[in-house]
Length: 223
Image (cartoon, rainbow, N blue to C red):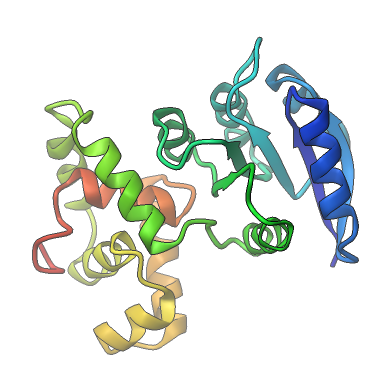
């Protein structure tokens, strides 16, 4: 299957570099480019990309606003934000808006290609180490009522679903969750799908952020 990619970045050199990098992959097709977030919606409507590489900082409409608009669509493409920062508050907001992850602009070409392939299959582009870094960064900035709201939302889950949610929050893969909770990988996938549906979330990154907000990472899995 060919992965259709749209690149949105206000720097023409970045767009050219990404097009060159990704254009060499047989299973990736660059279907278009945009120079600002205000172009992302129209381009997505016309070009129907599977993945959008979205710069987080643009002069008129930033990547956060554009990501929120795209992810609100019923046929939303996966969005990967582009940034020069490892743990930027805007990146965190983009992840909460439904972005599948982020890629640093100095990431090696092979890793950018791999990231596009991963998000096209529904996997987030965040390693456990990066997930922990993001959560540590945001911890001090969380509003006082965020933990309570997060716990209330997670309280709507069944006990087994909460266990899976906490494991996702710790950055564990489906296989690792299956081994630690003594269930099959397909069962883990089913639980993750139910968690996303019940909580109205887009992806595993948002589950992880919600579990962190609730303060459940240092507690028992069934807390």
